[in-house]
Amino acid sequence: MLKWYMALCTEPQTLVHQGEKTTMNRLHRNENIRNIAIIAHVDHGKTTLVDAMFSQSGVFREGQEVETRVMDNMELERERGITIAAKNCSVYWHGVKINIIDTPGHADFGGEVERALSMADGAILLVDASEGPLPQTRFVLKKALEAGLKIIVVINKIDRKDARPDQVLSEVYDLFIDLNATDEQIDFPYLYAVGREGIVMKSLEQKTENLHILFDTILSEIPGPSYDPAEPFQMLVSDLDYSDYLGRLAIGRIINGQVTSNESLLCIDAEGDHLPLRVTKLQTYQGITFHEVDNAQSGDIVVLSGIEDVMIGDTICTQDAPKALRRITVDEPTVSMRITANNSPLAGREGTLVQSTRIHERLKKEILRNMAIKMEIPPEKDCFIIKGRGEFQLAILIETMRREGFEMCVSRPEVIYNYAEGKVLEPIEHLFIDCGEDYLGTVTQKLSIRKGRMINLVNHGSGRVRAEFSIPSRALIGYRDEFLTDTKGSGIMSSYLLGYEDFRGEFPSRFTGSIVADRRGVAVPYALFNLEPRGTLFIIPGKEVYEGMIIGEHSRENDIDVNACKMKKLTNMRAAGKDDSVMLSPITPMTLEKALQFIREDEMVEVTPKSIRLRKAELSSQKRHTMSVAKKKAAC
Image (cartoon, rainbow, N blue to C red; front, top):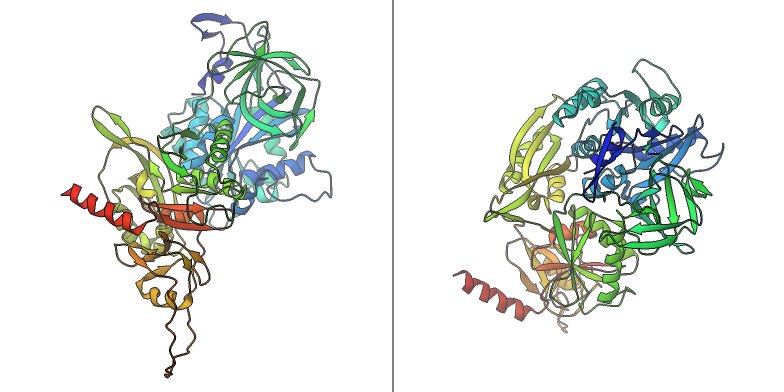
């Protein structure tokens, strides 16, 4: 996919473009720039290491108060402690500009990693000294090796009590070999680090107090960006941003040539159409902010303004010699979700953006910036189908829209099937389980019910075991909360897409039913107290309910319609205990992720800026009963 970029580094070179073969001259390298991506599994210390690089390279003045994880500037990123979107920044070391791309570590945001690697010439692979290479480590390393990037391995968090740096380094070598790395790629430099304290060393015995060794290794091991001095200006758009003053901003790396401010250029889109533009403002990265410049050289990552119709993957070039670069491509989505306008009785009370047209505009805006998300418009009215890499990625999108003031209803995430030679193929995940020995039996039993197959089991003798499973992607939807309950919160679960295999058969996704309100009103303590023996409730007294709203989880497999508004009958007769206060069990607040994992195919989540409600897709109990009878007759 990204091999084309590194093809520029071979000599002599041959590129095929629009059916014509052109032999290019020897390429030059810009030794004043280094472009690196920081890649790793989630929570292995990427953003923390970038903070230390900022502090020690002079980006922040001495004594300046700076928040931790400064690159995680999104509200959701700070709340969850993860990186969601790839971001650019730069530092200077010994007169050389180092452009740094901080990438997400969660598998669902793999599209951000693929987009970021298109701007890099090398990568720093961070690996936790205790956990070792995990699923996303494998995914990002595979993409980096396919792009031909030079890899620097950093064993991070060596100060952990359970650190095992030597074994982890051996596991990294095994991972390179397993990914069919070349001899040159396997001969990678490796360092040891304590990213939180800003310390990097070449050996475990060495004592250092800074990151100087890392900076020096970047300059000596990562090659400068290559370019052909005979070629005109070419830039591949790898990211988009928006400014209230400048409009849409195109971000990308200059492949060949130079660009100046106010220059007249051309944008070549996916259909090959030429769109003229003028660079109204030219900016580069200086630390974490933009810095306006008059010109930029080959290999630098720049920000252009002056065109409104640019898309990720477009080529920006000169008008005299328009040549399109190969577009960025990402892996196909594996999960889909249906979004509809909110049509519940409580619609429009809490949100400001409730119309389907506004939802459609917001989704189109998201598609422009996120290549991993796609959208379809089905025949149904006010309905949209979005597709992504995983349920977590889609949940983040819904949560972001919710905080922007949108109201909507979303369905349960469903996997996307492929069809070949009359067979149904489904996505299969390589699942990694790390849990205590006492919980392995329960976890294995649950996964086997969900068509999982154990393919490896390792016991380190520390009381914890690591198991690997091959399991359908649909089996993991809704399983995470159950897994944490089974392991008492101590289990670690992660996975990556293995490929597509034959459909493994049906299995129950949930063994419980739903407690559904049968009328509109306000929930009262007396009614909820009498409903508690039926299952687990999701609401508290005083909450407004409506017909078709799910207010709890039934302890049995079937759904039941109940009256949550039933008041205690008034009487003039007195009896002992008549006026005893009602004591209700506390409830766990419903989050968007829990709601998406809980619902069945005939249920939806009503999302508003202030509330997360569960409901039936068909609100009327009479119509649901009619549909159920018709379905049973059809099955017979």
